[in-house]
Image 1 (cartoon, helix red, strand yellow):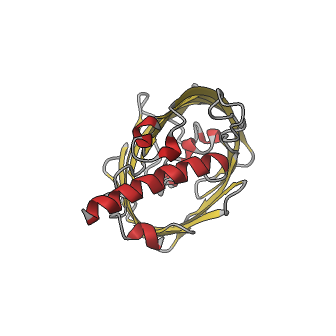
Image 2 (image 1 turned 60 degrees about the horizontal axis):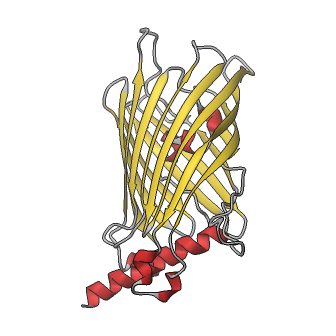
Length: 308
């Protein structure tokens, strides 16, 4: 009975947090392996792999807790005829408690060489997201959620800038510019999508012939919530294996592992150790799996491994 009550309370806390986030908090998922899934944050990243690149990522957050967040993304992007223009496609799905968000977004990037080694990219994205909140499933046990279900579709657009060389990357972006209102049938609703602002930077330092060190910093800002900072460092061993650790403010300490299985296939795994005391007592941490595959139809040399 005690375990059941803990899970039930945890479930309600998650749903309440989601409702509060609609008004004040951070609504977009923060991936631990964001540096390998950057199109989900910045449309200007499209085409940066210089070939057709597809990435799938699955995140199971706060495992062991009923109604915990579960997120999946799939992205694919490529230059157009290996020229300055690039296209990308992002599909996302996010579940938390009795709520679900799905979306599909197309990206366009224009990449300009600014030196012999670097390119500056300007990116735009546009698409649709659907929001489905089944509050009737909770109102049976808690009258707080007796206002009924919400199922809506919202268009949105985003913008980003991205600069990269073979060893450096830096980007700023806001993936959702339109602050759509949730529950449009309720004239008193003040719940809305909030703009999120991302700034990311990373650099690869050669240590010796077998080792490279890559620190990354990601800053996430949104009105009404504390600024969140993700700092991590990854060690590349013999151009094949990445091992790293991250610290995410107000959230977790994370371990990362990636392996270059072949010249075209990369596998990654991350585990988050939750540092929030209340949550750490009722869950078993968070797991994240990433797969990236780079197509090489024209036998053009693909840089392996990709640092970003």
